[in-house]
Amino acid sequence: MTKTHKIMNILKNITPYVIALCFSFSTLFINAQDRKMGVVDDAVKMIVKRVDGLEEYSSTIDFNDNRKQLLMAGQNYQTNYGIYASIKMGESSLGSNYKTLKNVEFEIVNYKPTYFIGIDSIVVAESRMKNGLTFKIYTRALSDTNTYTLNETTLKNIHFENGSYLHSERYLNPMFPKKDSAGNVIFDSDGRVSCEPDNRKAFDFEFFYKDGRHIVRKEDYDQEKENPQTYMNEIASTLPGKRCFHSFNKVMF
Image 1 (cartoon, rainbow, N blue to C red):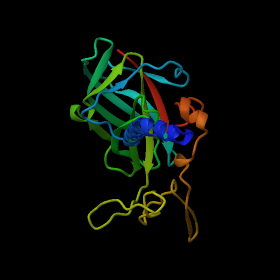
Image 2: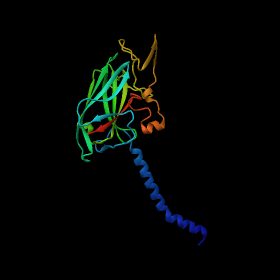
Image 3: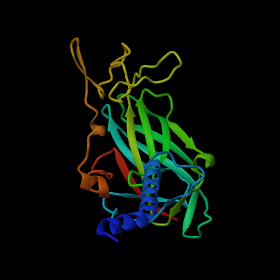
Image 4: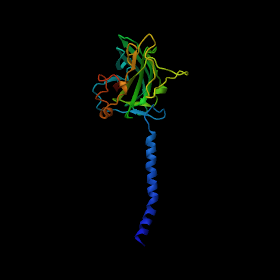
């Protein structure tokens, strides 16, 4: 048998294995693409595990106490405000070292306000590192709502380990968003909410500059890209006392 024939026989024998291996890696890649960050899936348990190293510039929430506890503080429109949460917990199927959430009532308290700030909505989502849970709190000046409730249906399958951290992010919505004929908010090409600078009674100076008739929309500092190392450990500039956009609260029960 010639050398060429030997090579052809070897290739013929290993080809099926190569194809199978390539198919396996392709399947893994497709599955990895499908696992996207977003709203918590009702059918999958979200387990918030204890993580060490987040103690600096954090606060504590006692799940055994359903009084209103400070979740985070912020300042917009020269108004200082605090966002509080009253939490009712339930037993977890994972054991005594875990608890579930049955109900969370949020309330925003304004201190010496120029404009009163309210809560538009709150979304429960996976954290950016996919190892925890985040309350995304959307606030807006001149909102008529200063309370918001998440019920057991929204919070089901979420399990907190004793000593884990509850992460919250505050987002400020513009005062005067533009809406279409169906009442849906309109977005600009850059993904920001399309909005008006004023309603002829109040000016939205968090989102616009004004000098006489000259009006310019401000940059959105909450969308600034952070240093990758900061993004990974969530400590250097994102905890309470460093920037009001984020807060971490240690869970105790």
